Image (cartoon, rainbow, N blue to C red; front, top):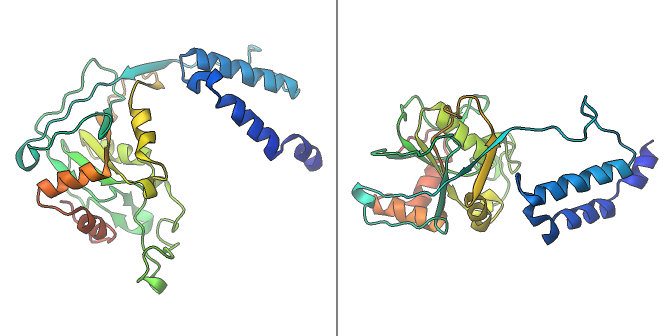
Length: 265
């Protein structure tokens, strides 16, 4: 059986499918678009060719899933130390919401730098340490804390401690989805992730392209009322400007965030 599977499933065949689905003909494969219809038709065709049968109880190949599309047009303004800073979306930041409502407005919300924004009991890690951030807008780093191997602590770019957040293997704590989820759990009204190409593993252009246009989510019964109202990314250079305007240094804050003793700023 394994040999038969190896004959059918090969790197070449997989690459061929990727080339087809990523071609211009499929128009990005976005939900609710002609590209989605073409993609579903192609997949059904391939399943049929492989001898598969429909899995839906009614005999269909597909299952209808109710979705809602949200198109966000963000506008930011700062007060106090950063009042002179003007940012342009989507080239310098992106912001959107998953809450199903005509408008999401955040006023007079303090910005709080929370390091990596992680609460990981199994690693003895808590970036909040009991402090109340309800109603705040959190500014946080992407990925997990990059903890140096204690056997080679002098080389941060070298070996990482595999006993802390699995070393270089990103845990769920490092994912952008977790960042927004913990922000919601803490009662924050906004979460801004600082984009760094290395830790994110993709350039800002990816964030930019995903932050424009319509975002799709499962159609909720509660309008996603429990989600953090604003999800956002900011370009690293602009985050540095924002922090500098308020008397903080990005590199110093990031370094401090690599300690369990880190305190909110």
